[in-house]
Amino acid sequence: MKNYRPVSNIPIISKLIEKIVSSRILQHLAFNNLHTNFQSAYKKHHSTESALLRVANDILRYIDNKKSVLLILLDLSAAFDTIDHDILLARAHSRFGIDGKALYWLNAYLKNRTQTVSIDNNKATPSPLKYGVPQGSVLGPLLFTMYTAPVADIAERHGVNYHLYADDTQLYVPLDNTLETASYQKESIEKCVVEIADWMNSNKLKLQCKVYGSKERARSGENDEKDADFEDEDDHYIDYGDDNDDDGDNDDDVVACRKQGYLRRSSVAALMIEAPGGTCRQTREDELWDRNAVARPVVVQPPQRGGGVL
Image 1 (cartoon, rainbow, N blue to C red):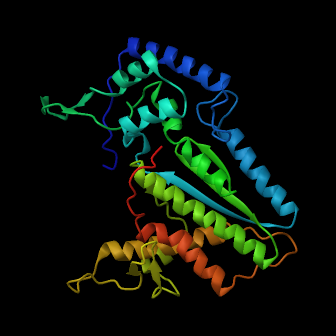
Image 2 (cartoon, one colour):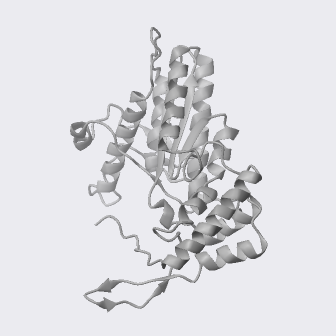
Image 3 (cartoon, rainbow, N blue to C red):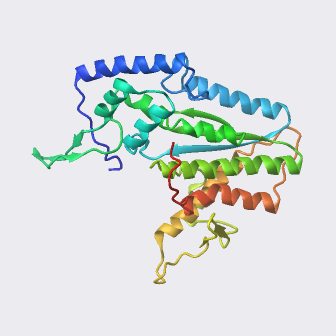
C-alpha cells in the first residue's frame, strides 16, 4: 500500500461554499494579472492538451532551427499532502494580495482539521492535520498552484523555458551548436534545477525521482563511471561508487541511488534531441555536467536554508 493519504469527508454544503470562494479567487487573479504565465492547471482555456502542445511546439521549432533541446521533467511526491498552511497563508497575502476576511476564512478552512484511523469499526484518537489540503476538495488544487507559483519565478530568473501543470514541471532549453553558448545554456538549467530543489526543500515539498530506461540495466546497476564523486555546495563529498556503509555491510539505499542516478542520466541523454543534419558530440565536460545535474539531486539533499520561503 503506497498511498496513505487520508480520505476527506467533505459535506456537500462545504463544496458549494468552496466553489464560490474558488470563483472569487480566480476572478481576483485574472483581474489583477496574478496568474502564473505557463501554469495550465485549473485555469480557464487551459488543459493538459494546451500544455503538451506548447512544449511540443517549442521543441519542434528549436529542432527546425537546427538546435538541440535539453528537457528535464520534475514531479513531486505527495505534493498536495505536504503543503505548509502557514507558508500558504503568508504567500496568499504577500504575493496574491488576499487579506482581511478572505484571508481569515482561508485560515479557518485550512486549520483545525483532524484525522483518524479506523480498523474494524475501531477508531483511533483524532490527531490534528497540520499539512496539506483536503483530498477531493474544490479549493485545494487552486491553493496548490498558488503555493508553487515561485517555481516559475526561478525558471524565468535563469532564462529557462518552463511549463507547469499542477505538480508536474517541464524545464527545457535550446542548445546552440557553438560549444561556448551551449555550455552557458546548460549551466543555466543546472543552476535552475538546483535552486528549485533548494526552494522545494525550504517549502517542505519533495521532488520525486522517476526512473526511465532499460530494466535489465537498472537491475545490474550498470554504470561506466560509477566511481566518480559528487560535491555539494558546502564542499561535502559523497562516494558514489562505494556500496558499503560504515559497518562494511552492503547498503541497499546506496545501490538504489546509483541505479536511479544512472537511469536519470540515461533519460536526459535520450532527451538531448539532435537537430537534423547536425552533430552533437558529448565531451568529457558535458558528461560530467549530465551526472551532476541529473544524478546529483538523487544522492545529495539540498542544504537547509533559513528564510526565503516566500
